[in-house]
Image (cartoon, rainbow, N blue to C red; front, top):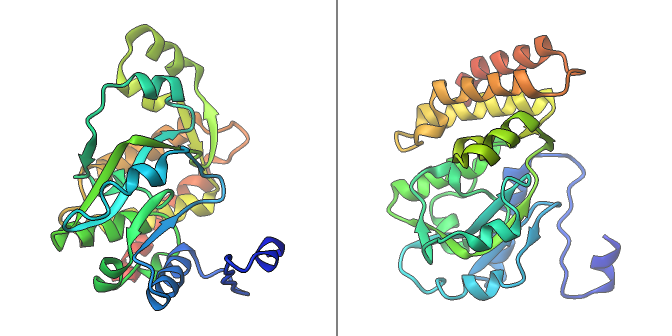
Length: 251
């Protein structure tokens, strides 16, 4: 807030109540639309962007039907910057799995987001980005990952899993790379993940394989096994089951 007051190019949009990330994203998009901006870059508080991000994004802002541009995400240290730089990636990847593009560091087309009705406020948090990605793709818009730029991102409080770290170094299998750090969330966040993932999967036929009941319960089982031992598994699963049941209230 103090920084905003010291710089006339920063506009602070505040709220006395926590109405969730979807509500905030809608306010940002409305402000951008009303002030003539064509694109909005959305960031989390812990996002660390590559120095070349905007430069690389600009190459694709003129492409037809592009709704969102996103970077290659280095999540919870599962890739280091050096490892990422050694990857032989194509220049761009067209996203086909809706949850492969997250809110953080997404460059969003203001007009297109507005045209499809914006973000779904009642989701509050978690899978807000996946839900709007489903609608964008269903309406023929493209989400492009620009592989020449990256984002350093933490999903929850990362907890290293030495067992899978060792397996990854021995085998080089991508499965173990993904499993070598657990994203530790609060029980309340597990509730929203359970609730919203089921809602998005049931509502959108193009939700992808990473929201299926089998995938989500496998993810929650992984959390149960590798979260800190101080966490109550009973409380975790109470919130997960309640979230799955409460998803019906969103329809």
